[in-house]
Amino acid sequence: MEKRTCLECDEVLRGRADQKFCSDYCRNTYNNKVDKDTKNLIRNINNRLKKNYKILSELNTKGKTKVTRTKLYDKGFDFKLFTSLYQTKTGNTYFYIYNQGYLELENELYLLVKLDD
Image 1 (cartoon, one colour):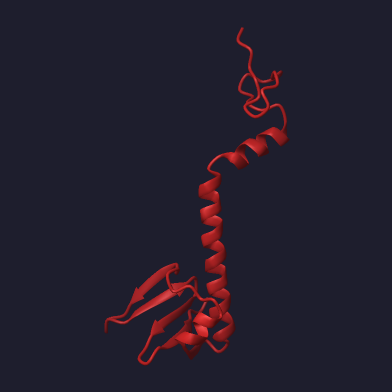
Image 2 (cartoon, one colour):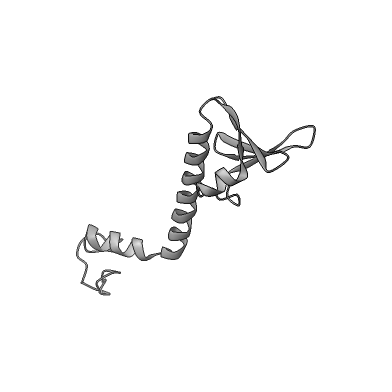
């Protein structure tokens, strides 16, 4: 019979035939190491999306308002990150972060909108 060892610490396993780890600690440690870079990338993008959402929410308290590009930029808004696009029949493109959206207008102005729940 083949000796089975923990994938994390190489301790000999006793018990179920399909067991891979000797403890919850080893299982968690092992799984946290798997795809660490990918998980960090996703976590960082989600944090930046949350920041964008918070900025739009703070500036758009009435559901529809106009702000300057400078005001958004000064608060740390990242124009490269959004969750969806909506193109109107007239060709305007709204960028959305969840239910908060913005439309670029003339003279570096932006129309902020909020979708109803």
